[in-house]
Amino acid sequence: MSAVPNPPAPTRFKQPLHGLLSLALLLPAQWAPAADTSRSESSDPARRTHPRLYCTPADLPRLRALRTTGVHERIWKNMEESAQWCMTQTPRKTWIAPISPDPIYENLYDRFYGIMADLAITEHLAFTYALSGEARYGDATRDWVLASCRAWKREADDEPNGSKAYAVCRLLKGLAVGYDLAFDRFSAAEREEVRAALTSIGQTYFAGYFSTLSIAGPGFHTHHAVVEWGSFGVAALALLDEVPQAHAWLEATIKKFDEHLLPQGLAPDGAQIEGSTFWASTMHYRLFFLDPLRRVTGRDLFKTHAERMNADLALASIATHRKSGYDQDHANVVLEPSYGQLDYYAPILICLAREYRRGICQRLALWDETLGQIQKTRYVTPHGEPLLFELGGYAFLWFDPNVRAEPEANAKLSYHFPSVDEAYLRSSWASDDLLVAVRKGEVVVHAGGLPVLIEPMATREGPGLTTQSLKDDMATATIRCADASGEKTLEIALNRPEQKVTIRRRVPGAWSWWCHGNPTREGNLLSWPQGVRLRVAAGEIASLDPDGYGPPLATGFLKLKLADPAYRKFPLFAIQPPRGDAIVIELSLKE
Image (tube, rainbow, N blue to C red; front, side, top):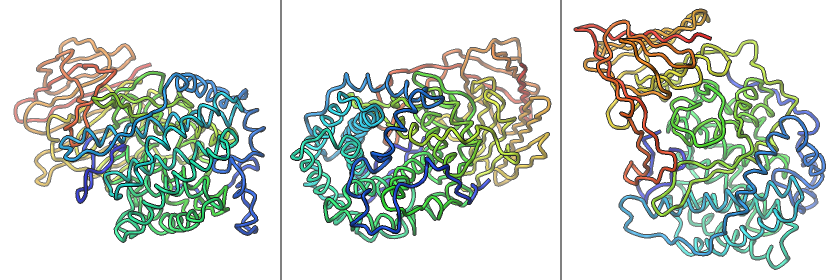
C-alpha cells in the first residue's frame, strides 16, 4: 500500500499489495499565482502574511462565496459533515515512542497511523476554518496543532532514519498547514511554540537526513522521496522569512524536485514502479508542494515539468462513481486496495484538470460523490490507531468550474504500462461501463458498477504471464499475455459495439476468482441484477462458494493484521478447464 513507512534501515519497505498532458498552462484569472516573481524575497507580502500556502487573505472572500455555488457547494457540504466529526475527536496527549525490536511493525504502524490521523484532523479543521471563518473551527485547529507539537516534539531528539521520516515529515506538513490557515487564532506565544517545534524537528531532519548523500542524491526519487521531500518543502514555505533555516530547506527541496523527483518519480510510461496506489500518493505530494511553491515564490514547476504530470494510470483504472461509506478492494478503481479508491484519486485529477485544462480528468473526479470528506480507511491498528487522509480541503481549493467535464476528442480508451506490466481496456468514458485490467497476467473485469471478476488473490502466486501486446482499432481491443515458454496464454478481447468481453485462458489447473455482488447461477451462466451476464463457454463452473473469499487486511509484509471495521466475504468461483484446452469466458453488459 502507498501509506507505508520504511522498516529500520537498511531495508526499504515496499508493500506487496499493492496521452501526455498539454504543455500549455491556460489558467483563468482567478487561479493565477499569487506571487510576483519580480519582487525580492524580503519584500514579497506573500512571505510575510498568513495564510499563504494554499490561499491568501485576498482569496478568502471569493472562496467563501463559492460554498453556495455548483460543485463547490457539494464539496463544502461534505467538508462540513467531516468537520463535525472532527470536532468530536480529542487531541492526542501522549507521545508514541519508538520501540525496538518491532518484529511485526506494530509500533511502526501505531506511530505512522497516529501521526496521519492527528494531522488529517488538524488539516481538515484548518481548511474548514479558512473557508468559513468560523472561530470554533479555528480554535479547534489551534488546539490540535498545539497538541501535536507537544505530543510529537520528541521526534527532534532521536537520530533520523528512513523508518521514521515517512511519518515525521507528514507531521511537519500537517503542523505547517494548521499554523498557516489558522494563524490568526494563535497567540504570539503559541505561534512561537509552533515555530520552535517545526524548526527543531525540521532542522534535525535537514541536517541528519535530507542533507545526506543517499537522500539528497538522484537515487532517492520515487514514492517515499516525494512524500518526505514534499512535506518538508511545505513546512519550509510556511516558515519562510520567519525562521532563518527555512531558506536553506526550501532551496534544497526545489533542487530535489526540479532535478530528481519530477523528472524521475514516475516511469516514462506514467506509472509508478512501486504500484498504482503509490502513483496516487506520489502525485498528492507533488501537488501539495508545487501549488504553494508557485503561490509563495512564483516558481512554477507545474509548467516546467508538465510532461511529467501524467494522469494516464488514473484515467485507465477508474470504473464507476464512489458513494459514501467504506470501500472494498476494486470497488471503483480496479487493481486498487480499499483505501486507494476514487476518493484517493479524485483531488489529484481536479488539480490536473485545473492546471492543464483536461476535461477528462474533471469528468472522472466528479464521479466521487464524497469529494470534500476526510477519508476514513479500513486500516486500523490493533491498538486502535486509524489511517485517515485529508484531501477534502484541497479538492475545494483546486476545483475550477471553468473546466468542462468532458473527454478530449482524441482521448484513448486502452492503456499499456510496461514498467509495471499492466494493461487496461475501457469500453467508453461512461460510468459503470466495461473495464478490463490485467496485471502480470491476472485479470479484473468491472461491469455494471461492480467488479464481477477479480483474479488477484494474496493467498497464491499469479500465473506468471506478462503482457505481450495490446491492439485497439476503437471497435475491438485485445490484450495478449503469455509466459516465457509461450505455453501459458491469456487473450482478452473487448468488443465495444456489442458491449462484450471474451477471455481465453490456457493455464493448467482450475481458475479461481471472486466478485462483488450476488450473482445467480444457472449451470455455466452467472447473472447480476445490474445487467451483467457471464457465461463459461469452454470449461465449467466446478464450484461456487457464496462466502468463499475474505480479502485479508494486513500490512508490514502481511505480518500485522489490522482491525477492519467493514470486513466482508465474497463469492468465490473455481472454473475447471476442458481437457487439454483453454477456458473461455464471455461476459456481456446489457442496459
